[in-house]
Image 1 (cartoon, helix red, strand yellow):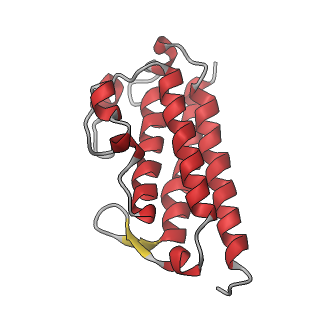
Image 2 (tube, rainbow, N blue to C red):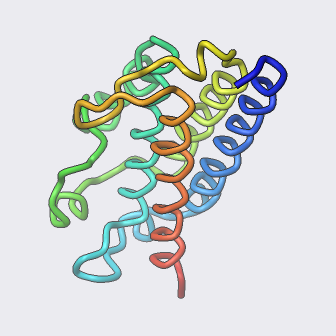
Image 3 (tube, rainbow, N blue to C red):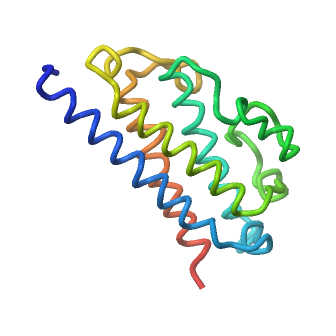
Length: 170
């Protein structure tokens, strides 16, 4: 990567983070509690759980890229929402995921918006060293910051956005 392409890569990542997380925010911000927690199929996760999982995953990666604590921790959301302080829902059974109760959709969307803005700004500010710096991801693996953003924020969010779209379909 050359210094001439670094701003372009960082800008592309920032835009992708903003757009993909924005889709998830838009998909949940207008839902009532019943819609947020609806179980539309015995093996389906709720829209609320999927959005929370997407935001938590992005938050963990963002914190590791920035070398800061997660927004989740800084805002005291685990305590405020009576949810586990660590984890992102990966490894939960379907029944556990379906049983997870979240706050009002607006509060979940507010977390998503603040996270999106913070993470997009951080991605856009990455220089070559920042983009190529290795950061811990999940399962003991390390990725470059660029790859972590692509894999665990952008692609992960797109995959789960499809799940939300199907779950929300009439």
